[in-house]
Image (cartoon, rainbow, N blue to C red; front, side, top):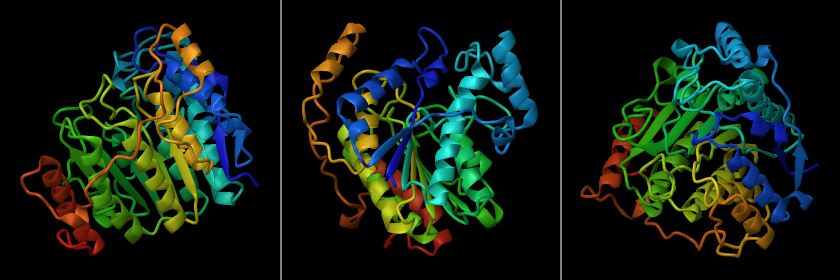
Length: 390
């Protein structure tokens, strides 16, 4: 049995909003080129599988049937449906929109199936992580919500507890909305404060509803948060709530747009810090979910010097293949990047990011610490945890 499975098809590059749009398929192309150049596809612990189209029935486990029909119609006629978010500046129309988005979603759902049956231990879909899509509308470059569909498949297959961890710079609002009142799903999102970044949601006081109160956890950090402070925030919240939830599967979204070079956020989280967070999520899966881990892509718009590095590291992590931080990137990959007229990164990060553990004490004068403590006060009591001590 292969330990990890990466879903991929060149047809995933057809999810293309057109020239000038931030979500360029180039970011996926360069990611897969780097994964290959690093020799990851030759590792016995990683297998490659095709990304198949999801059926309407599968998509409709998280989306309204009339919305799915609207996406198909818009992608064939190129007639905008602005009320459903189709044909906006964020989500321009393109031919074959339904099929391209259905392939993203199908890849994640198939990985969820393989995880639950024990066919694989880890699954990765770097083209997935479309966390903003709502049941009846496209939003924030996301047409279909593959993360939510994968979680729904796990629940339908019998999972009683799933943890969703969202590391994107933007709040994981679509997944949160779909499972807002479902206590089986813990959704944790660390993101730039909605007062300074799309989608404007994800306040620390938002904790879910009814029997699910406390199963929604939001960590909105201020603009300009560094990688060290970002890791401190994760360390202060995520392990504790995951431990209490006792998930059978961890689904994580690894949008890398929190990086300082990303044009669509105001955070300053290095590739090295993101790599550390990937390692932590992986460890949580082995500690609490018998290793069952589904890792998805997401945002990330520094297409040549951040996204490929972050997601190649994610695939290596899932395959249990150690990569040396600061190592020089393959010359053939750098040449391919430069042939596209883009700037190529030279090294795979630069080294570990030192951070101060929350156990070392809370600093009320620090803006990130204040944000973290607000989250702990809002969420921890629902889990029987002390916001000051646990």
